[in-house]
Image (cartoon, rainbow, N blue to C red; front, side, top):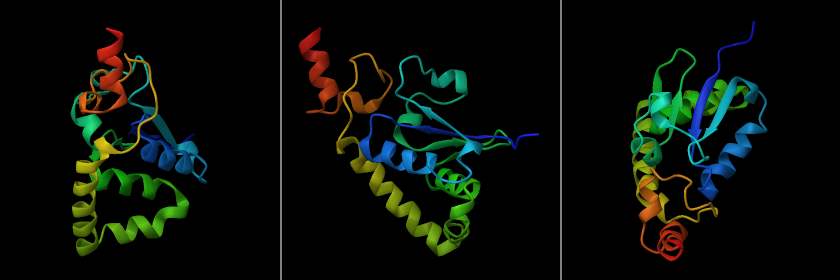
Length: 146
């Protein structure tokens, strides 16, 4: 019997995010993880029990037991699932390390909307709060094509 899968919800339009996910996909044990692009056409966050705005702001992972992990806990879940990352997962659980990881993640969340984005059709990711960031390709496409 196969081990239950962890589901990782990631922003496929974020260059940094998708690069990291592609790294995890190539890692040993990645067959135990289902990777879901939240910006793929047809993705419905509500069908996955996710808040449409929150899933675009912070990392979400559905654990094998059905519980939801977000932010740093989401990464710890990924690292715990992939055998090559067990030391990172164990270290990240330590109080002081977790504290600083949470601070770092908070700052990443603030700058992520301004990081480079992949091109997408104008209807992809309509629920994303980042589609209306001033100067983003998404906003410019909406304004020039409609």
